[in-house]
Structures are given as C-alpha cells and as structure tokens.
Length: 275
Image (cartoon, rainbow, N blue to C red; front, side):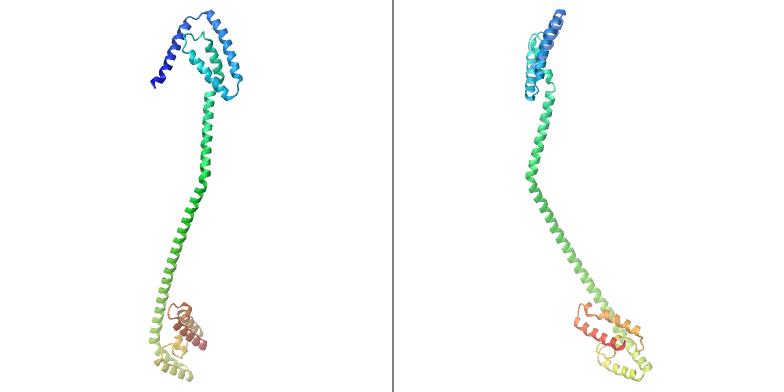
C-alpha cells in the first residue's frame, strides 16, 4: 500500500513546491502571459473535447486529459506549461464521466444479475413445479388416508356403541316384559274371568291352560302376546303393539333375526285380532 501511495505523495509535494515558487515569482507581465496563452490553449482544447458526444470517445478524452495533468505534476514548471491548460481543457468537459461510468456499470451489472436470475428461474421452474405437485400429492394422499382411518374408526365405534345400546335395551325390555308377564299374568287372567262374558272367560281359560305348557310367544291368546289386560282400550292395545314392534322388529335386530321375525308375526297377528 505504501509503495502505491508513495508516487502520489511525491507528486503532491512537487506540485506544492513548484506552485509556491512560481506564485512567488508572479508579476503583472507573467499574469498577462499566463492569462492570454493559457486561456487560448484551454478553450481551444475545451471546445474540441466538448464537441465529441460518443461515450467511448469521452472516456478516452477524460483519461487522456488526466494523464496529461499527471505528467505536468512531475515537471519543474506548472503555471507556465501549456500542457496544464490543454489537459484541463480535455478533462473539464467530461467530469461527469466517472459518475456516468459508475451508473452504467451499476445498471449493467443489475441487468446482468436480473437476466441471470430470470434464466435460472426459467430453467428451474419445471423442477420447482414438479416438486410442488409432488408435495401436494403426498399431502393429499396422507390426508385421504388419515380421513379414511378416522372415518373407519368412527364407524366401528358408532356401530359397536349402537349394537351395545340396542342389546342392552332389548335385554332390559325383555327382562321387564318377562317380569311383568310372570307377576301379572295370573292376576290378569283372574280379572278376565270375572269381567268378561262367558265366551271370553272360556277363551281365557283355554289360553291360560295353553300358556302353562308354552311360552308367551307360543300362546294363542292375543292379550298374553301383547301383555295387556282383557279390559284394555283400543288406545292401550295400540300403545302396547307399538312398544313391542319397536323392540322386536326384525330390521332392528342385530342377532337372532329369524326368532324376531316369528315374534313380530305373532305380535301383528294378536294386534289384528284385537284392534
């Protein structure tokens, strides 16, 4: 770094030394000589240099004028050197060349950068598009598999819950019906005998005798099948029928479907007789 700056410091010291000596020797004759001859040389090269508009020529003139001034700085005479005024005439019209060159390099560099990025994106766009589509496809497949698994789990859970609930309800109703049948069947039959006419009483007795040997669903007594009293109203008959139909309907049965079908036929038969 010192080796690079040493010539510059030497030139600056030389300029200061020479100019201080020449300025001390300046008089009126020297001023007139310098003014006339220096201005003539300066404006001559100034207008010639300013006439050129091409950028490359202006750059050459700028650097040539700077080189001339650099050479003048090493001489023993500066103010009396026509090279000083000629170099200034070549240099001054193109002082904006450094900033203009900087802007040109800057924008050319940015343009080259933009074009490089543009070509890179153009070449990589298909790969990026394929990558995005593959990621979307993988995400879609995973989502579908997850939804399918969750749906299957929910269906299995709901089915098992429904099955357990229906079985529990059926067992509850069956236990209740069997208990009611066991506790009330004898009392109901006694009341039927006292309140009904002779034909119904005989019919009840016959049904009672048959029920001793057969179960409720094997009975031929519609009152026993529907589990109602012989004095039941039409509304009570209908209510009992709906309750039993809800419990023993074959479409709602998950097990023993054939048995439920036979029971449901018995229920329909008893209801059709009494309604």
